[in-house]
Image (tube, rainbow, N blue to C red; front, side):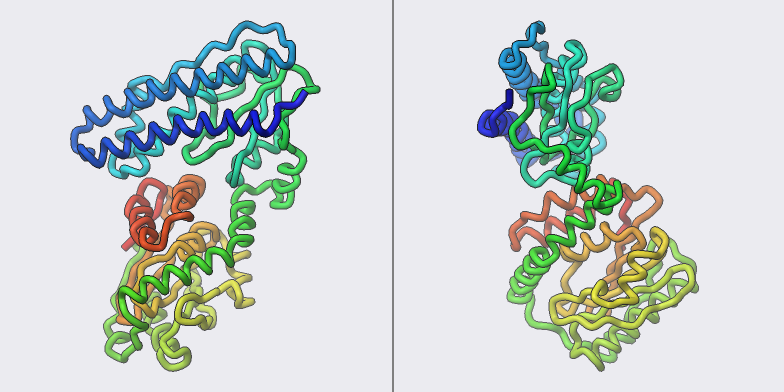
Length: 411
């Protein structure tokens, strides 16, 4: 017996609709009232989580009972799990109130959690099997979970009474079965396992593989966004000797004086190289923050530069220790970090710091500190991949402004 794709899709859409509605109402509340009144904020978030969490749990019960009936399983009716309590909601609000988008996503996650908890709790009660079914453009972590196939639910399933790994902006869901002949149409754990093994069981490597596959699309988005920004901001600024002389001394994440001077000299040399040998277009280079070694400059065009196209740079990105190197590059149009910049920064473990030195001598840096959490940062960044060109700059600024929550410092 197999659950049809149409039936499963309808179930997913109904659950996703609840999550989306709860998140939108939270966003509407913040837009109208702000986030200063923490007590009122918690009360409203708790009301949303309770209302829509109960709906999510009820939908999960309906699907559970339907699957039991189709499989002729003699089990009691499913019992809905309790939505997150006030204290759990309050903890979420306190942790995310500084970032309204994160608060909105926190509400969505807790609503989704109620449905997932319902499925797992009833599966444990009835000694049923469960599987994590991907949907849409699933993240590598969800693909890894899906590769586990069907598993027997037990007391060890979940953590602290909740289903683990539930996150916002995800339409993957649990399915259950009561005998080995049952399945969900389209679910292929062997396919997901092959993807996981191709990355040597490394989820971060899976993310980098996915990013590499989409690089051309991301580059195209960057070029389109850059063209729009240039229309608004003016054309490329030619590098002058004065701009090179005024490049400031920066100390990303508190580097020592010797390293700070090395970075400053690298930025000046980079602008000079771009001025004299690349028509003031983009130039990049990698430096080793431990040995003070610097690779040759890599030329780009007016809108992009790819250090991965340089053999020596590519080797460093694949072989250097984590958080040991810095990627320096210039932006001819004076723009801030782009989506491609931040994705490059996140998906290459050896990169500790990335800098932009503009053609007028201004410097921005972003740095991974000791609290850097790749999974949390990457999940946050992927939410902005579909942003329109007019909103992308603000989205990236918001992402970096809240970098402290996932271990990224900017200056």
